[in-house]
Length: 319
Image (cartoon, rainbow, N blue to C red):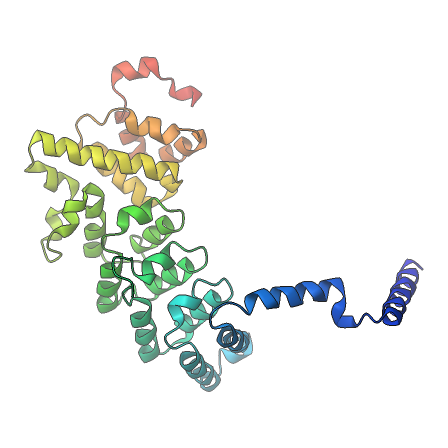
């Protein structure tokens, strides 16, 4: 009964609109769609992205995954359509999914071409490469994650990806999406141990990322670096690392494993870590501090940040 009444009302409304000269395409919902399409039409490569999305919808269907010929045909069309445009369209929320699908379904030859295009240097002098901008983008950083995980066993591809990230580690670590990229790059499905250690070296100071990348990676840890430094330079390294730890904690990077390893290394090497790091971890978001004791080794190092006198002044039970 209720549905019949609603249907009659809709028919009356429709007839009234027709009498007034309002067509079906001018209804409020369709007006919103038309307005959205109008705004999107001003984007760069709009027509190409629109066509690429149609191909992507076909490519990602379950029935086509077993049809290698159809997948190869669609991939060839996408490669031609978006050739030279990947970095630009990757920053768009809809087109970024198309690029992710291209990385997933690409052949070996197509994958290398996509990787080389994504890693091209910036056309503007002094500006970071588009790959770094993608690593800090809301949508494009998923493409960076996809590339890193796909080539985690390819040494040649890892060398190219490492060079793209080199010199930008600290800025990425203090960024909401960039820190997620570092977590994958330094994780089990990311770079090999050599490149992980080389990336971590940048946390100790800008001058250390200028070292030879072919140096013995067994001797580039924090302990090895400060072992031959004078007290003044040693304290400068600790101060730099301490500031990065506090800054990254403010950005919510506490739950990442690379942060845990960095904090553990800092507390292990520094004979007097002090409570600055702990104070920075607490800050305004007290809940961050509770993520740390979930790891046994970190619990011990976390406790070592406090001297016996500081225990009296600070009550960890009230944090």
